[in-house]
Length: 231
Image (tube, rainbow, N blue to C red):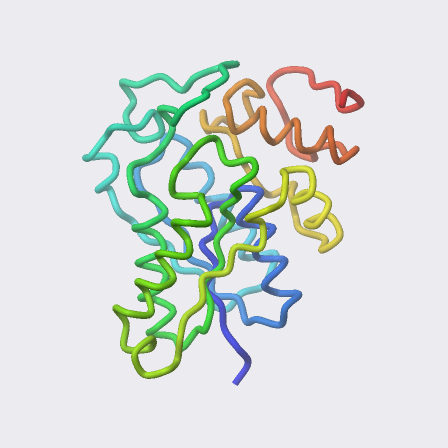
């Protein structure tokens, strides 16, 4: 049987690049997308389009409103504003409490059931907006926990957590994805979730900077003019 990988697919640039990496490494792709009450829920529809592009047999979409009930993040609480054109030296208000820990736990459970040997996630410790659940220390700890807490792990069928973008800048990620023919035109990154990316939220600014530094033009539409020649 071909080796399988669960890919945590948000519909964004990084997770879609992970789909391309996992495919190149010979994995059968089993993407998993979370609809968790995020204000940018457009990404769920984009994730469907990305899964179609990769011609996967199964794309699991998990509906969970726990995060919306919990609040505490501008991405799930409509009463909190998404920062625009702001530098955030600390942990920004767009951080969703323990999101990656919960997503990876569910993805690992899914991996165990379908016999997948890997879970891919697009976290980066370089361009990561200050989120604590994107650091190598967290991933290493989570990988150990997964294999201590699952039947697969304790019966010598370990599940690895793969983070191919961990030490890449956004520009390096974009160059990698471009080489792999990743469909960036189907992705969305904007925290505001409009048909056109706002170009001013933290996620948009990181994405724009990445394409500029990579010397490429982003194929998605923006609500404001962008100078792609600027480095």
